[in-house]
Length: 125
Image (tube, rainbow, N blue to C red; front, side, top):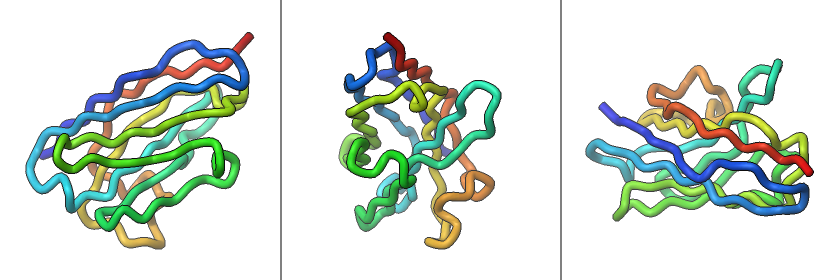
């Protein structure tokens, strides 16, 4: 069993930056694929970024070059650095984890077994 707790959300002006963190409990953390999804008001939850156990990273096209995902297996944490924020980045950001996701499914939220409660990111002037 894995428990995930996100932190770091908040209100930021367009062009600003935030760092989201997700702390995980449970064993074998280093084997898990870790991901961030987000859900904007009135929209479906969507993939943002993921990092596999080999540190390979994946990004949704609209955040490439602006967001950076990283993991610290010693601390059981995954971090998402957000920069160049836009109003359309507003939403609830969720951390997700799974031990057995294949590469072709890494963007599919249905494949993740473990989820955090979410943290709100609001980009507004």
